[in-house]
Image (cartoon, protein in one colour):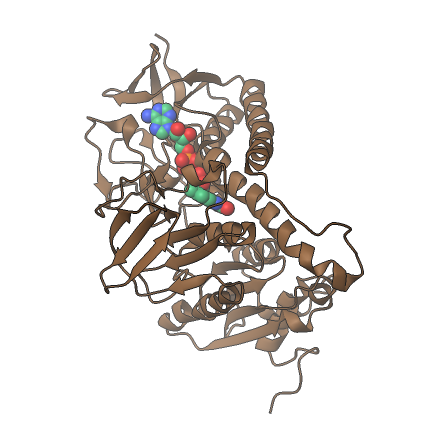
Length: 462
Ligand code: FAD
């Protein structure tokens, strides 16, 4: 059996990118995938949610039509979830076809089935194949956690995977967990007509985001009539004739038709059952170069728990493969600091680099600038004049340290901010670079100018 240079376990964002990069570097590559190519991201995560979210946003725009001079003949709206699901699957299918074609074009051999790593870098696939490799990329990704709460086994308690394929809109949806995934589903089903409540253990929603963003988001969600209960710990689920009840440790009861549990994700360790490999908090431990405790096995993506985002998985995959194939040269480290995080919906929120609180902890003197979308022409033209951009900079060097935003198009602006952070730009660089007018990204330029006290479209400060 001639060993492959690289065998990749998992065909999600980490796995398929690792396979392609390895082939680009001249390696002979095998990829093993138990389900469909594309992983969580394409099949149960980023893409399906954004397809449904687009439908939600489309619905939210409809009531604005009249005020904008567009008179709809029949304002009645009926949702057809099976058609929505089929449409989502069409989008997903196009992307899977794209990945399949890419892998083929690079001559990557794809094995369908569940792979298990045995000792000596040997892999068995449950569909019958066996292969060996000089290096392994372990990219098994993650799956939703079902916390050990009594009653959670009820079919009325769903994870983010099952809720994507509902045949009817639930009348009342209880969402356990107010992180990014929970909030996205809250917005989707709220727009579809469900009565939605979010129960969150922490004192605020999306606690990884800047506090001001979290507050602004909470206000927006409340305006949309989404009920939010923070500081709430679920004690039990109990089925009822019409749905289920959620009982909390604080003694409250919430009733719903269905519940979604979005309390976090855990590593999928099925490929390493029986293998002695170091784990940490349930995730596969790696060094900064993404090599595991077993030399020659690298673990990029969700499986290592370092940064559970698809674009982080893409980057980790490239780093892991380049390190795996580069035996003698200097190795690349994975750093999560300049990786943007986005919460989708309307308005969207985005963050890159340090929040103000994190920057304060560094002990540096700071300059903080803000610009509201109420003063941005492009946002107002689209009736989206709410939210703001906030920049945090080092007061002494004016170096940009972080950008936090909530408002229109911030999922795009954050990528500009990420590049600026990685090239070490200053707020002055941003303030002095003309941004196309009218554009939502002008708000970043103005926030940078505000940090320097020279924002032209903000009133004079006293
Ligand atoms: P995965 O995508 O989980 O892929 C792992 C693959 O490995 C799977 O296909 C699995 O079948 C396969 N596998 C596992 N074990 C084996 C085995 N033993 N043998 C063979 N195959 C195996 N991230 C963003 O950046 N933006 C978003 O908007 C976003 N939205 C999301 C929405 C939801 C609802 C969810 C759940 C996640 C979202 N994410 C988002 C996160 C994103 O999906 C993950 O970060 C990303 O998919 C991780 O890629 P991965 O390759 O590490 O793992």
